Length: 161
Image 1 (cartoon, rainbow, N blue to C red):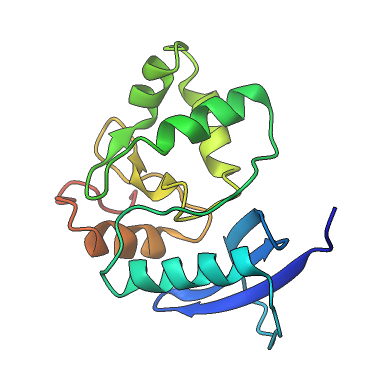
Image 2: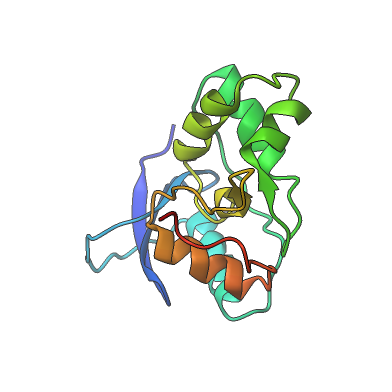
């Protein structure tokens, strides 16, 4: 297997760290790390290019090569999140029902929280059934920014009180 490289992308909502090899992305996450990197792996360059297109409003769907490391249940949840269209939201309960585990809402929430591909796998598009936005690993303010950026009608989706 190739060696990992990491690269940092300065988005409008903070630094995003991308980790991968020449042909696969392994994780994308917000970070407080600020490092200059000299990355030369093709798929990392491709991922950062697509993130930039997303943040500048030129991209709604991602096309990167990635690998998911998680349990079978987590992978089912993550794959279901990939089906949520740009500009739409679904509830944790909706996902639980769609993957065949209607009573596993909390387990779905846990899997959503362990999403290794922030933004690419759009966990920000998952909200609570009661209309509140729920948690987000990058902070609720980022989730609201992403929902606004995508043009979601998020009137009811405001931070939990």
